Length: 131
Image 1 (cartoon, rainbow, N blue to C red):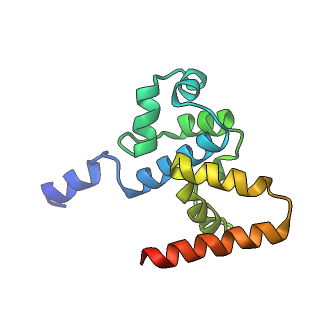
Image 2 (image 1 turned 30 degrees about the horizontal axis):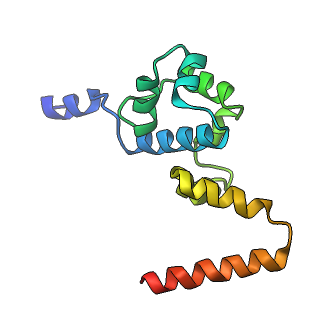
């Protein structure tokens, strides 16, 4: 093995899997209405460190991931693809913005299915006009 290949294997910088893991951490934290500071307190780290985990800048070790899962009340497997949950998690990643989450929560409070259908039709019409 040449030096450049060995160096590439030893690199410990965060990559795409770390970014995806961070998105899932953020998704669950926002779902639970927990601030970065509150999660940091539960983990014994600063809110800046939580930001770095969520952005995929810093890697999350196995022990830390277990702490995060416990703090966010989910199994560790929530953060990984598998068991056909990958699509479910991916479809929820749009909740990354506060507005998306507010929209979904408001929609969920509507009890009348006719109103729900009308709202979806309205949103689809608006979205079609954006193209």
